[in-house]
View 1 (cartoon, rainbow, N blue to C red):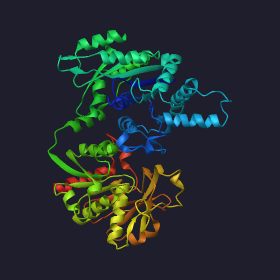
View 2: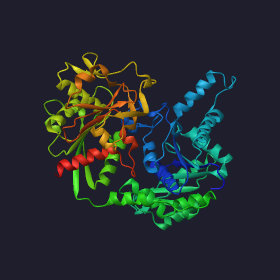
View 3: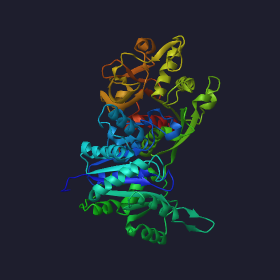
Length: 535
């Protein structure tokens, strides 16, 4: 691309929420990335929380953590998995975080006593974050998803900012609006009025969509394209039908088949490039391939009624199952309901493996400890992540007769084998966040799974650590601490070498799993489950 200025693509949504803007944003990034362009993706969230970090997972699903330690929306997981880029603190801005910065600047006298208003102050701050993303990333394309739905009160400052930005940067901006086209079974027809009204709502702000993504259950008939194109003053090729797919990884392939990236490049008057799409297509074909083997995994956690709370873990497991040519069934088990007397009923003979899931707080932790102990006694392949790792440590501490072994997160008395370590300088505010280096014990399972590497880099999100005071008491020939933080102050990984697979780690490896690069720990777990079941 001769002209190196950054182009900006904005994705908005109308009619209703849940149309898949995040997946479409990631898919556009996918196509442009595989054409050789540098891509950066960000999401603007209209809610007033400073970040998703303290939002209940039942509200917005999992908290995705970036390498630089930013707690973000789960859509950033789609961005990373689809594009293999690393998102940053520039990738997710909530209205709360933007207003917080604005209020701080006002208190410090930056605005010289002026009245602070939505326009220009809030809108300028939003535009500043969009421009900053392009400047810091030096990307060819910055793709910005605007959360929420056109017409929402909270979204108004973002739509106003968008209107101002596009007006001043028309040649380098493209707006893609996502709407829903319902089908009425009573009259046997699709209805375009919701889309028309959504576009009118945009036009109130002086914004005209350059392209439409039209969501529906099935492909839309040509007459619907014609009608919507006429009403929106767009060419028919700028109205894209996006129907439901069996899996989200097909969507970039579908968009590629209708030459979406070529259409976007033509819009910006940028020369087309050949796309290197073979690896992605191979993955999707492998994913869709009929498989003879099936494994059943018990997923033990406290947010199992809303499985988006564990979105990246689910995808990491599916990716590894794809490459190992096996189907996976998830059995979601609420850890709150598990006690010592019923753990053998909750964990069934049909379960081929167990994942002890992350979480915070007292609720459900004891149930995870009982599962960790049961898995050890029955030698069921088990993978503990973050809080699941801590449950494994507490379970073994109890087996070692450490009286009242527990975590200070759930109790104010007992022997705290899991505790807040005051010397941990990485805690920042309240959490240890972001990527850090782990040193591996040579010849451990951890060492072998990482292809005999002496180190690994994974992302963290937790307050509590294994208490160094108890490490020597807990560790033995059966239960080994095989990974330590780079200064060797903190235990990162536990494993039981004599079992089929029993490994837990303090970090969140799921954030680094990628469709074109399955994560070695999930790979190791899935392989062990298959080996255990199909001896």
